[in-house]
Image 1 (cartoon, rainbow, N blue to C red):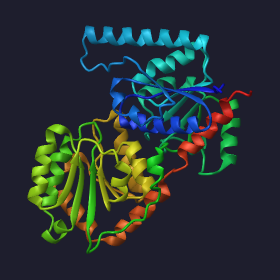
Image 2: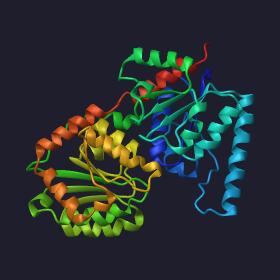
Image 3: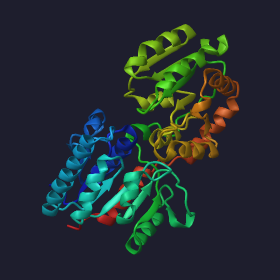
Amino acid sequence: MVSINHIYISAGGTGGHIFPAIALAERMLNLGWQVDFITDKRGKNYVRYLSDKISIKIIRANQIKKFNVFSWAQFTYETLFSIFYWSIKWMRNRPNVVVGFGGYTSFSICAASLVSRVPLVLHEQNSVIGRVNKIFLNKSSCVALGFPVQGKSSDILQVQDQTFNDLAAAIRHMEKKKPTLIYLGNPVRSEILSRKNAIYTPPGDWPIAILVVGGSQSADIFGHVVPKSILSLPIESRNRLRVFFQARHILKEMVESDLERAGVRFEVSEFFDDISDKIANSQLVISRAGASILSEIAIIGRPSILVPLPSAKDDHQTRNAEIMKQAGASIVIDQGDFLPEILSKKIELFLASPNLGEAMSERAVKFSKPQAGENFGLLLNQKYRSEE
């Protein structure tokens, strides 16, 4: 029997937007909903993780990179066409709710939901509300927050893991005030949840693993800095070390050559399909500070050295990293200070301090929100489902 409950989920085509959206799509499917997933052509790299029971829509949405008349004209045409198309579609076949996970791809989808009067819910992964979500903030029914955001704590509802009373209170609040801001956490995929709070082995006189994962935005600096910092480590540390390194194709050969010179075992890939295993099998993660990867690291429970991307919109990565640092889960290095000699000293100190690694691991787990996808799904199900 076809479900009478229908949700559209829209996410920009980067992993930071798409992976939490995939996690929610999984949950809504398990709750018996019909799920449609909308992304752009960049998202083709990630939608293979979706169940074949989920309908995938790839829309034309190009970010304005060159500020000229042609780029603006193309962007305007594609956006208006998409708003018109989805508005007409939803007026004829009205879904229960549309959920936008941000990114410029979501702009037309969120706008169409308002035109067709379909309830709109937003999810913000980072600690700073993104530009598209900010545009639709006051028109949405609810904004689910993946990270704590700045503002009065009294204005943000807290949903603790496995606390159904909190969800009921949030639903009642949504009836009275728009938008309702709810700190739920970032939904993560089932493969990450399967390694939740994995046993942590602190650094010691045994094999040690470090995972380096930079994300898709301006991560090339990791390829130039991290291998050189590892080469500067004492020989006894390098003899025990294995490095999992995510690097773009054009840097792969250079990274492999530098790690080979360092004398460590390594695995270099443009993308790790088994990222949950890589995180769980590592004593330390070196990463950018996108909220989605930080949520995955925290749920599995691993210490991290974070290098926020300074050009990230509204400097949200710096804020994300500071929150993790305040939680005691991460060491933060500004990109201006991200030099081989500085990173090498940080790694050496970490490897010589097993108690530090254990404490950071425990604090990461304490900060994490493993029930985020479950709670978000339950919230949507209780609020927007149709009665048969």
